[in-house]
Image (tube, rainbow, N blue to C red):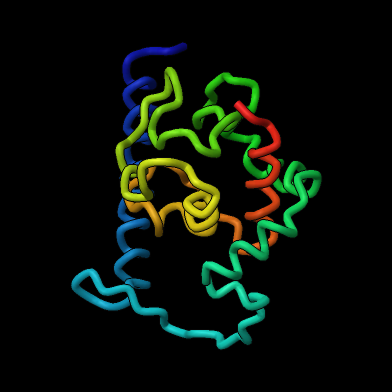
Length: 168
């Protein structure tokens, strides 16, 4: 029933299908390639009004936002982080975040960091966390963290308030 010719046909069919898949992907990339020589240019830009609520990143704005931060709301927003981070002292895909506010960067016990976070600073201050949580890959290029970030400034300060409430 299963002789070597049948097995050879199955393996050949799988290899052929894989080759067609790879060539299709390559052709699709070439067909829809934007820009050239490493340039990334959007083919169409949609203009939107800036309604960031005056969070231009100024020192006074950050202090005002932190003063109004709500740890209970931050716990709800932290739900987005729970897929990779724990707050019970155990590392998961990412390092544990209990006691992260005020902790030296890249120092969670037992977690192997990529080294890219050292660009952020030396200590996880609330302001460092605020900027990092907005765009992790933009603030620390090369970080292994794949999270896109929290775009709302209120969400970021609420998460920071929640993390501060956990202590260490």
